[in-house]
Length: 290
Length: 172
Image 1: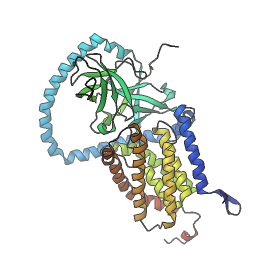
Image 2: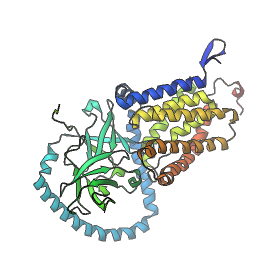
Image 3: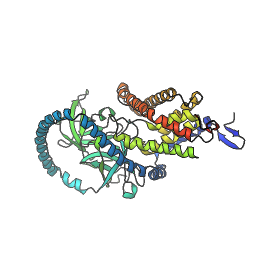
Image 4: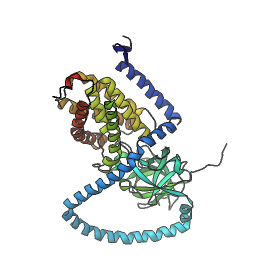
């Protein structure tokens, strides 16, 4: 059977199977090409930028409105319940507040020690708004309303509320894609601020619902790292600038090999309610080694 | 021509809804897979060729916007559209059971393939966790969305069915 069939005399069509074959080959080629290089990104990102992003920015506002309304409904229904809970919360919050004030004091102290304050201020930043989230349920990526025309570029770090959100992995002229650190396939090299021990922070889909990320390979030979310690990006990371806060250790366990430790940490950023982010327009650069 | 414009509009609206409004309204972080409903429904209604083309373009858009490399979702969605199109002969506009069943099966397959290729191959073996927390909730949410979306697709399809002589009398 010829793959090209003539249907109604002059009109000529391609059979479904033949088309499937062509497109399968095309897809495999696309995967091969885009896995190694990013030649295709520029034209496709530009096209998508003009077709979809304008709608998205508008409808993102609608989404925000709707989610606020739905939150209100839920709030009204459970108002009484919440009232009791809130009273309890006030008590715990007061307690937390004092703890946080202590933390703040400690943080200021540490900042002075590590000159973190200065470092943060040195980074040039651009604010951007989140206009879309991953359409699937497996990964956590965001779309921002700024792109290469605003000076953004791939591998720039994204922060929000003082904590690390992720990095830009793809840019179009007026939009960019951020891969967050809670993404299941992301690893960040970090260190414990108080002891300078290095560890690997990796996103995990199973912990995403609890707003946690896991860490592993912590070499804490002296056993000084405790729950609540701050984790910042380390200076050996090749994508992330050093000294950006990632989160606080919430669970720490010794691995079965008795050499390293692993556990969970609570990120400094509330990924679920993220609306605006800051993009650090400075990229990590390396001195030429070769 | 009108039919094509309608299809493109449907795809764009679903994509935009899926990644903005519905993400904001997600239940437990799960978003219904509207593009899969489109692919599956169009495959069933129009046959394998349209199904695979629509699947390909839906997947390609997902790839460009959210994937690390191009072609993965395009390939997956294309085959879903094609296989749904195989059942075009069993399609009747009055029958709602088959399309909904097909959407369930398609979404389940989609979830399982995503798990195997994106997670299992990276050594994430907690299958039942992912099944219970991602795949099945997505299926349930997608079916709910399909109950709303499928009649809309069907309505648009019958309204703009230009080449179909059976519908010219204006009586369904």
